[in-house]
Image (cartoon, rainbow, N blue to C red; front, side, top):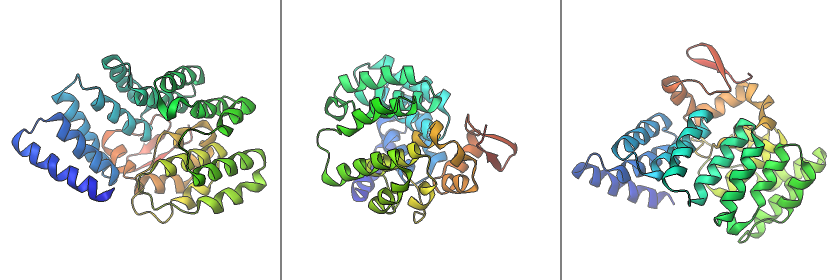
Length: 273
């Protein structure tokens, strides 16, 4: 994957040398920086790409993903709504909209967005992610029933991790079995790692910090760290340190602290509001 990113960056740099306002090339460069924890630079590039082509839904969509991960959920929602208005048939746009509503605690809207995403083919039409909405909304049995079904194309390891998560959800004493199975992440982007981080956030577990402890660059932060179930963990120094390794703290210092954090100190923030 890294080799592919490097090749894409080289092609993007060449395109930008010819056409400095190429939105497509700017997006590739922004995504490269995002996966290398240069979040502030990625943010600048996404904004430049949007300015170059305001009618490109991908620019608004990808920027919304960064904003949601950074905890700028209100602004993220504005951009994902713009992306949806430009092209209402992109399943991933409805999917990130659902993630934003989950982070905002608006589970009614999250359900609508998640159903729309599934109807457009996300996860093979599976309602697996709708189960997460129900868990967050306190409708535990409905949520578990959907998550138990998994999704088409799930590999055996993902199946086992999902099943162990559900066991830990029922019995906290079994969390160690789930933790042993997922081990530690190197912090690089993968959908499996994102799923595991979502599971950890839903469990409200401090294991998030251990899971990512060996990563110098945590390139897999997403909106799940802003779930209500993870609120207590956001109050800790470990959360701030994790977000610093993700490049988010540098981004916050330039663009403002997250919606869920407050600061009386320009260099620090407490995410316990």
